[in-house]
Length: 314
Image (cartoon, rainbow, N blue to C red; front, side, top):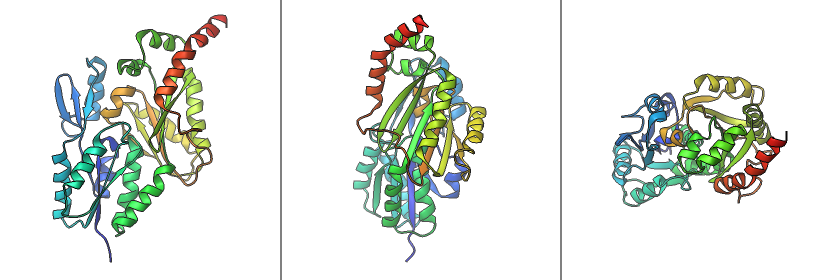
């Protein structure tokens, strides 16, 4: 018996509209709070408009989860249209409350079964997992089959981003003015990473070294079956990365998309992120599951004075 499973996700997924429409994915918009107003992400505020306003925004924009009603309305819409099961997959619980709101809504909704999945990802890391489910659902797979396939791919999904500036980490409270100033002097370029709910960051000196390491991470991960490139108002840089990835993953045509304000507010313009689902992982993104962004930033803070002294001696 053919199933009629539908996929629900949130606007942090960063999937291009063309894929959302082709695979009938329902995207619930988050709220972007900016310059004293609250906007529905992607509906009342475009990515382009957001990044034009970001440099002058004070305080830094914030985001908030959709209310429970938004999820119930979405689930009801799909059930009324004939869905016999729903997968609701969202940004990692370590980053947002969206998944918890979806769980509460799913518990309150009984028209059809709703399975809520924590993607353990952000941006198109979430998006490609939603896409995996949507492609299988379109073929008539059952709710159990779609859920199982997403959970199978989840630990094989990786996201890593190269930031152009430390300014937005500072504005978000991760660095002080002093730490940012020293980081700028040392030409520090952060590379943030996320896999299966674990986040971390590497610090590289100079843009060139950061770029080399960025591509090295892709090589280390192993062969990929799906690849995405997400940019923060840096489309030409995304095209350059696409061309370079042809030598690493020659059989994959990357999906290119614009980053959501929910992520863009914290990383700033110029950021490029690579997302991939590996066929197999040759080297994990993290050597230890205890690696996390806060620990890495603290280590950076502890070591940066030594790096500064070394530079003075050069």
